[in-house]
Length: 523
Ligand code: AHR
Image (tube, rainbow, N blue to C red; front, side):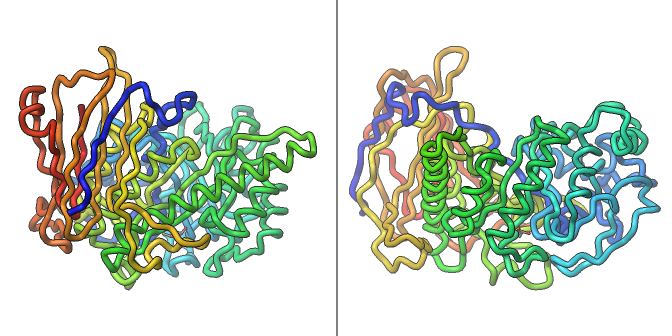
């Protein structure tokens, strides 16, 4: 058994009392032209037309003026603002794909758009889904678009034209072309732009040295802000804890508004999986220190600093063995992956002060909680914790929690910490207080990562009266359990609604958190 603990939730003991509330942008999404993410996930695949329930119009070229028409209604229903996942922002078009994507191939009449080979995933790109379709899709979801620029084979001139095409309000060439293509006067108003994707990666067309990237990105940033000074630029980082990150942050701090980092927790063995997000937590801390150092350097030179936030624009559990192959990174996520994923969600909330945006990679079919088949969708194991966090863990403040003494003492490989040894606790928890019209509500996530030991916790409150409690528990004996189209509810939360009396009688002295399980409570 793990040592029992007492959790005292005091609504006056906030971790960051002076900070902004937790941003909903922690639950942003990501669509890449990869596998069946766009074609098959967002729109029906023209190669494999679906028998029913799919809204592919005769002429897909009219999508831009048909609003919601043409999209898979079921997927959109999950991602939309009024859906289960409530995606507030969507990143597009990659990922690695963007490093040889030429946006002008994806505008105008569909029948005239060129089909290209693309070098990231070595497939063909039809260009059926382009900028106007992406903006339409975001409008349909009621989410904010975030576009990543091609700094691989793309030129600065192309990037400037893309920005002008999206945001131009004058009677200039690119703005007029947008009006002609979309039939609408108003600009796309894309505020967030990424300065390239993983430009350090040897698999990338970019494959640059940090100093080369920094010089190029500074030039691009300066020019882009001349076209539209209101945009927010995101510099391209690595894991947040690397020499690349140090050099790029140093050089881009005056010009970029956020610094992008990517990390995927490996998920084959149990420990690697459930403790994988601990590495991301360390990377966030190191990255924040690099930003602080760059600010200190500028202060010493009497130059203005900047509260540069981290843009964690690719994160997830991703296991190479489970997801690679010919299936376009379609990973089946099992019960253990779900535990690792809950640790990720806890990390993002705990570190929200330093994170401006976090995009789950990816939103559908490709390493995703949400899968499609022509006849329907499947919510994988990860889907349910994501939906609960996305709905409840925002617009609130972190509450102080004690530390939990039982720590993992096995080999340190699972956490991939470059900066020395790190011992995460088996119990991982975050609590958030959200102000409501009649007081406040408390949301509590508790993850027990121990493979064999249960845990008991006594929960107390200060400054808060319980009226009712909703408790979601995900537990399976089988660590490899998965949801499938045939058995879609193998791993779903059990939900218990309790009034104060029931809570007092059943749980006030002892909430039992089973071995390898996750609980989410709304008070
Ligand atoms: O999300 C899949 C891939 O992972 C992205 O294309 C790339 O940026 C990352 O390496």
